[in-house]
Each structure stands twice: as C-alpha cells, then as structure tokens.
Length: 314
Ligand SMILES: NC(=O)c1ccc[n+]([C@@H]2O[C@H](COP(=O)([O-])OP(=O)(O)OC[C@H]3O[C@@H](n4cnc5c(N)ncnc54)[C@H](OP(=O)(O)O)[C@@H]3O)[C@@H](O)[C@H]2O)c1
Image (cartoon, rainbow, N blue to C red; front, side, top):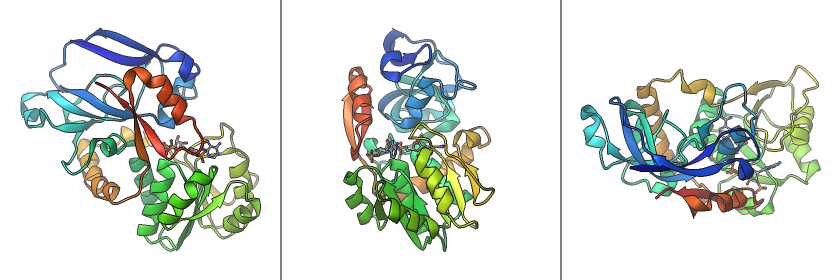
C-alpha cells in the first residue's frame, strides 16, 4: 500500500517548500488505528509552522496539516467497532496525507448527522474558540473581535453571544464579511474605520485578537484598564506594542492544552462541539484535489473569501 503526503523537509515559504511525495506505507503499530483521510482544510495553523515561525519546537521533516476527517480502515481488536466509521484522528501525524496512524483512544467518532466538510474543520478553530471562551467568560461583557470574518472569529462571536455577552463587535478587513457577521448578530466594523474602532474599543471588556500589529496596538491604547486582551494569532505578521501594564494581556495557544488533556476530556469536549457547530454559521467549503494543493493555498490567501479550502485526499 502506498501513501501520498505533503511534506516539508526544511523551513520556507509554503508554496515553495511543500512537496507531494508518494512512498510505501510502513507497518501499523499494534496500539494505533489506521485512518484513510477524506478531507483536510488549509488553515493559518497549517502554513505558519512551515515558515519556521515555531522552529523551537517544530522540526522538519514533517507532513503538513493539523486537522481533517478520515475513515478507519484498521484498528486494534478493542476498537474494531470503529472500522468503516468516520473519525477525527487527533494526536496522530500530519493530516495532509492519504493515511494517518493515530492512537485509538484519540480517534473522535463523527456523528452521522455531521457532514464530512464540516467534520474536517471541527478541531482547530472550534476547540480554540471554545477553550478561549471557557478561560475568559463573555457573560455580561462587551466583546471585540479582530479578523472577525475568519472561521475562528465567527465561532468566537456566535458562541460569546450564546454565553451571554452583552454585545459582540467584529472588525473585518474585507467588506465581504459584513453581511455574514450581521446575520450572526455581530456588529461589523471595517478595519479602515478607525473612528468606529476607537469608539468600540473604548467600551470593550474582552478582546480576542488574531491580527497583532498596528490594529492590536491601537486597540490596546483605547481599551479601559479593566478589560482583558487575548492574543491568539498574528495574521498581520507583526507583533503589537503594549505601552501600559493595563489592560491585562493574555496569550492563548491550543498547543498548551494538547498534552495535558486525556482522551475522555477530548471526547467530552467534542460531544458539545458537534451540536454547537451544527447550529452555527461557518464558512463554506471549497474542495481541491490533493495534487492541486498549490491552488488551494493560493485560494486560502485571497482576501474576502468566504470559503475554506479543503484538500480531498483520495
Ligand atoms: N492560538 C490558537 O490556538 C489558534 C487556534 C486556531 C486559530 N488560530 C488563529 O486564528 C486566526 C484565524 O484562523 P482561521 O483558520 O479561522 O482563519 P480563516 O478562516 O482562514 O480566515 C482568515 C481571515 O483572516 C483575515 N486576515 C488575514 N490577514 C489579515 C490581516 N493582516 N488583517 C486583518 N485580517 C486578516 C482574512 O480576512 P479578509 O477576508 O477580510 O482579508 C482571512 O479571511 C489565525 O491567526 C490562526 O492562527 C489560533
């Protein structure tokens, strides 16, 4: 049996560094299950490590991709009931490949009522959004989001409202996101409207920021001292400056929780995520065959897209 995978063997620009390679599959270790991957999205979280931004802990050669959905084709006896079922192979290898071997207890079964395009994107952004809202409760607060048209931003906004936020305001770069945000009950503000941004920032209790750079720096200058600013991404590619000890700034990264959670905790988290996701607005999916991965990344980089590129593995 052969496996086709997108590897990076050194750091660099993803489009120039990633390579599609086919090689014979190794034998399956007895405690692992083998999953034939169906779909895997292209997220910022997949591309940033290829650039070397996390070089202190991510060491190539590696297969790219952090999430996706697949079908179990082989499992240890005690997990044989999952053969033929769809799962999210957590804690396995990179997901941009035809087959992933993962620890059986970390394979999260996908309910029949969740379609594969949604299941493929049920991990990184939903889990990050849910964990941040558990750490920084939005109830009774005015919430401000940056990169609000992103998948993570959309979920943060909708779920903050369900959890009792007084208001959610979302700053977006492309006007394409305004109507979607409004449909979710999120007040949309253009990145160019500095007056409105300043006004909303000065009335915010909680900020979830994925852009960093100038926008984050200017929001921090306007925020009340009592508010909390959570940085969870640097889409601008630039850090922000914190000029005063207050408001409080916190950093969030999902990787800080991955190793401390046991399999029961993951299964219980997903039992909540499936129904929440199924009733939330999320971006559309746009499918690309695995061999068209460069086109998928090119689409990923388009400003104003309202779809998430998904690699089709078979
Ligand atoms: N810390 C964690 O554990 C964690 C977990 C999950 C996600 N994240 C972060 O969350 C962010 C969003 O990820 P995602 O997968 O949800 O993204 P996504 O759905 O692929 O959307 C990304 C959107 O970000 C906007 N954007 C890109 N560069 C921008 C900039 N310089 N200024 C303003 N907006 C910009 C673009 O909006 P336009 O269309 O308006 O240009 C783009 O559509 C990323 O930074 C990712 O690393 C972090």
